[in-house]
Amino acid sequence: MTFSSFCPFQRWLPRLLLKQRDALALLSLTEVLSPLAVAGTLCQEIIMASVNRLMRAIRVFEFGKSDVLKLCTDVPVPSPMENQVLIRVHACGINPVETYIRSGTYARTPTLPYTPGTDIAGIIEGIGKEVTTFKNGDRVFATSTITGGYAEYALASVDTVYPLPEQLSFKQGAAVSVPYLTAYRALFHRAHAKPGEVVLVHGASGGVGIAACQIARAYGFRVFGTAGTSGGLDLVLQNGAHAAFNHREKDYTDKIQEATGGKGVNVIIEMLSNVNLSNDLRLLSAGGRVMVVGSRGSIEINPRETMAKESSIIGVSLFCENKTERNESVAAIFAGVEAGWLKPLIGPEYTLDKASQAHEDIIQTSGATGKMIFVI
Ligand SMILES: NC(=O)c1ccc[n+]([C@@H]2O[C@H](COP(=O)([O-])OP(=O)(O)OC[C@H]3O[C@@H](n4cnc5c(N)ncnc54)[C@H](OP(=O)(O)O)[C@@H]3O)[C@@H](O)[C@H]2O)c1
Image (cartoon, rainbow, N blue to C red; front, side):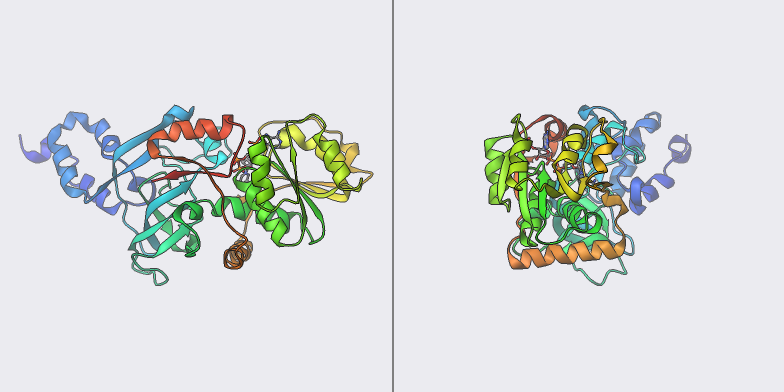
């Protein structure tokens, strides 16, 4: 038997692995080999010889519960194309949306298999031919990735990569993108909030909440935040809130209303709308706005509650941000770091082998203490 007839994939497999584009870039050897098992070990040797480096990465082969997050150790390190950079990931933010996507219930689902994760910070280890703004060795953070952030290496398009300010650690760099961009978008692009207004960050102890408190305080708002534990309340106060309230106490909304002198809250940044939206409408001032940042289900409200005060319920989606808005938010983030008020607060840290646990914890565990991250 000739070699070609024994392994008909010999010509295209090495090319596939060397070209490594987008989703194909991260096909692990196991993924490639499993349907080819019949071709025997010779094929495997060819593939091994054609791959320069392998990395550890989380791969999702099917949508489902957190145990579909599989740690693979044989994923090829991808190569950057023209306008891409290769980042050695030191830390990656963990966002609730990654659990919705993993479960397959989210409006946008990636092609399987995939590696989750967008908010990475690390060091550039490779640049595409057309990249002029970065060089190998630069410390950076990214607002999205092409190949996924739950990995030792990730490709990112150069226009989503920013220099990591020296004031921020890699862990803090991984806690910047989704939290601060969302908080800024909710406050300014969607609520059109004005300094002097009262802002309630409803769910202030987590990633987006801490960011919202820091931004709102720096921009001259009166800031109220909520948390579910005494530790969370302390963190909310330490990160910009003038007053903090426990959202597990029965009468906490009365206390918030009292703190406004009965005038109500101008803007609510809401992290759990399916629980709070109805009460939020009662907490608002005349012309008040509830910003629906997070929601995990449905809720019944009385639309009449919006009439007397001409209040608004406004959706927020980071996916809808345009380039101009993105540039504005990023400029504000850099200004905040420079001024010293923007300090991402790192909460629980995980290693990649604990990915399933991390996805359980971000949804199930109460008592947030800042941004959950992977340290890689
Ligand atoms: N729309 C968008 O573009 C966008 C972008 C980013 C995030 N999000 C969503 O925003 C939400 C928050 O994200 P995150 O990254 O900050 O999550 P996180 O770090 O897990 O924080 C969750 C927050 O919700 C609080 N919470 C729990 N029960 C609450 C209740 N009954 N009322 C009010 N708050 C409550 C938690 O407080 P305790 O743990 O102290 O109780 C914590 O502060 C998530 O649903 C996420 O999917 C949306």
